[in-house]
Image (cartoon, rainbow over all chains, first blue to last red):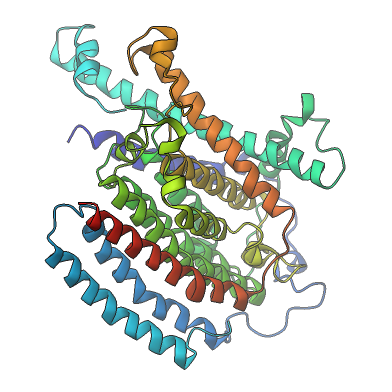
Length: 118
Length: 363
């Protein structure tokens, strides 16, 4: 427990380090006028058109979904990768089977073009 | 710092009563944490100055020269200016997400400084999963970027935030696989063990020579994670508006700026720890104890040398990302995603399998 106590204290202090600067400007703030042009969205000089959250490019949607697959692949590889001299070849080959299955999936994704374009 | 037996004895020597020992232990912890945070802030200021000087030299102009001698205080001057600027909140934006977004990016990077060793016992938390902690906590940063982009109520910010998040998560996997290869070579995920495993043979023992492909993939992936050129899309893609940072002003914008340089310093320190031998004095056949007649890694002198060597290696390595930023052009979004998914991921996976097979063969 004593080896984790600096970590716990640091976990409290580092959010403070990044949140305290957010409050520093308040004593210096003046009641300046906030007019609508200043607060509206910036669109390079023209008036903002439409709603900012109407739609976005669908091609961003598959990127995190396709990230879900290699992410546990890498996470499950880490207990396997660290002690290679403590697991028998049986352990290595079973992990190879797991990676093979995921590689077949990745090849299918590549050929179908799911990771193309944006 | 790790509270181990020698520190406990030192603390015990101050007093005999139990509660005062606790208080001294607590004070020791606070001193070390604040020293680290102070060191990080100074380190970031040095990087900002270094970048401005190097970019000025590359572009054949004089860099900052008015704020302090050689322009050293320029970063402080910029930060102070940003502190006094008006803190705009966009209309109809999500105020809470907007305010918290930059802080989340900074917090996730600050937390990763826990596991960087500056000496054999000069690490804030000697976790046995050290490098894995960095990988996982730095994965929180894209959430901050998405919050900033969405909360700005601006189409360009939203799009920039999505692209930034897509870039960050795409390059996490090659990064993790390179780090896994290193921990495979050192039989441990603890950063202290990884540096210890490189301590023989001087600089011929560096992981750089044992993992050349891994080093190059790590370099590219960490540049992409830091969102530095040539992977600068989220900040400058729309070229006139600044991506997810468009609607920010004042110190929140400063927090994004600080987060970028904190991330750069963190990546350089991790390159030093993982590939360049950490705090070891890497000239082979000369060992400091013989040269100066002191015990190995004992005494304030050895610790100071260790800190100095770590920082020297990190800052010498920093020339590479900074020069890259001011030399190479920016790549497009589809080129970026192709590079991450179709080039770096198979190469890093192959590197991991190659390292595994070499370890198994050498058993």
